[in-house]
Length: 279
Image (cartoon, rainbow, N blue to C red; front, side, top):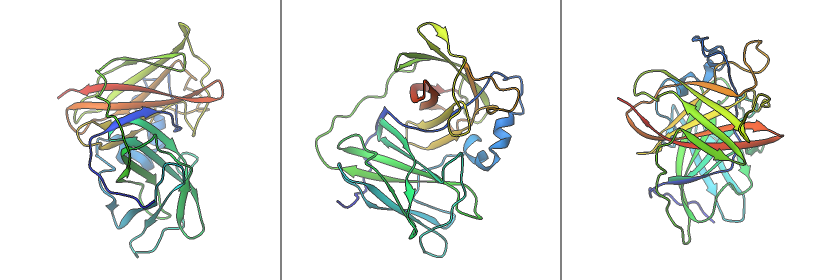
């Protein structure tokens, strides 16, 4: 089935894999991990990403999308040809985020690259709906980019309202509590505390070179903010839980949906939050 462009509302869910980390040393305001991930600094400083399929000469071109088949796409470079050389970012050549346009059905997967520049991944969609897909990558010799495109899987679907803002989320038997305030135009620490059965989880496992990974999407237009945790596994100061701290900047005030990935018990879990960024 060919891809379809669509600007419908949004919806989302949870089930994905993405990176994680962090930290017990919020006092390290210089954010060692954030510096280590300097190649992604554009994500952490409030600049919206993923709203356009083309940027800096690179274009995300969907090829096929189907309810039971692979999703395939290419990224062309400034010369108009498919890009075939990429530099790994957080243990993957490309991170693909797919979310319904109502901010449910969230998935984070890692496609495989063919020699001709075609990316392919087993069905990352959560049934018929309007979606937005983000490709987060670094072409060889170029700056990191996040490109985005609208996709539609035809069929009956039900939109889900954005959940109310809450500082607590539950997933797979875990309770995750958020402290900190997302603030428009200003950096602020966001700390997520992971517990299970009432007990702090202090043995989080590294996943994609971190203890936690956080993606923030602006509810109004699905602008993408990809932030990183303070510290990283093995740096001598970052504890494996229960706290995971990130430095984040919201480009504007208003509601955002946050997706926190963390690994424990050899499985990746995604906790989801609605937060409202203050002026």
